[in-house]
Image (cartoon, rainbow, N blue to C red):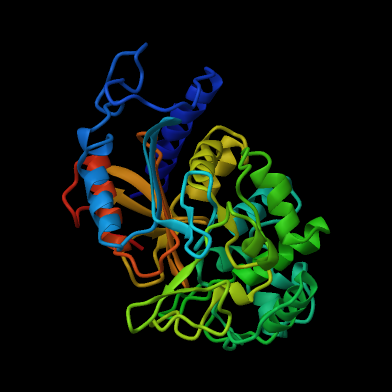
Length: 408
């Protein structure tokens, strides 16, 4: 697909959601028999497929998983700002008997906030996306400082290789954790030429975070609170600390599945790890401020709407953020953007991000051409996430599982 075609699609989808917001349409729940726009002519794009509604195929599928203890958490489907389906299952805190519900925040994997923050600063003229790391940060090797650009960090072609994290270390303050990451990133080496691509892509989120901090004079956590969470009215979302995670009944505890089939509360058992490949030896609760932050499902739906109505980025810069930059360098189908991964499903764009994390599995999906948003937040790390996403896509688009270019 050529760049002009992508831009045209982005402009149309921005106008679609922006126009809805400008008209003052309330974001309320959608009754089972209520059309998406009772006051407008119903088109194919505005139709609410039966499988997305309460009692539909997707709803029944999630309920079956929960009944088998294969899902604990929240799912949400919304269309043009109106909730179509909202379900909660399982326990946020098994020890205290607190159930999951829509107001519970889950530890997010693959959040959009790092890349969005730097694009916000680019919109303001405070950074340039082609600037090098050395423009803003000191202490990196000369080749990194002079050759690696923000653009490379955002799309996974920086060529950087980082040392292994000390996953067993337990952090006891924001300051200790912040200092560790400052030192850790400066041990990076340049493995391949920036921009070349690699089977070991050089994602540079930790470096981007430090550029945001250097430019704004704020911690990254404070920046996101002020310029993303507050703007989007994401009142239940935050970069909570571990003590808050233990004390606040509105934060779901993360449960890591062990090899014997038992579930272990990650935040109450810092000596326990996830045993699964890619997460083995890890427990995100050891961070004083857990990676990814915490979000509620309604907040992620609000975020999706805000991305396209000018709340967090001007329309032209939202185009910069979400438009395709390259094939996905992680080896799975899809296309890289500055934020989520993009796919084409049944002739329309789907952009989303997420995956399993020690004790949690999360994913958000945005269908900007038709105004659909899907959110999956689980405090179990061993759920059939790919299958859930396939069922969600099938419900929204009518596609058969496996249609499109896949998940990335």
